Image 1: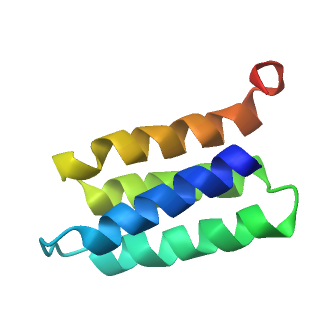
Image 2 (image 1 turned 120 degrees about the vertical axis):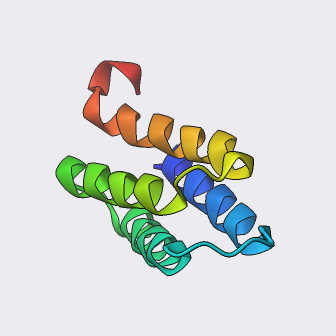
Amino acid sequence: MTGLRSAVARLRRQLAAHPGEFADRGIAEEELAALAATAAGGTPEIPGLRRSLLLVAGAIGSVSALSPALSDLREAVDLFADPERR
């Protein structure tokens, strides 16, 4: 859970600091806020995590400056799907 909180916080910070505008920025910000709430609340449901990850990835699109933080978020979500990696 700590890894998920950390990954969400990092991507939120980098998105907030990113100077460029893109059409779906609001969607990414909303989904990251939802992920932050989920991470703070307890054991999240894997389908919900994956859905949020997909929406964030689609909204961010090809903003290469955010790719490393998005990869960290994907890794954190994947840890919930694969209990042996936890």
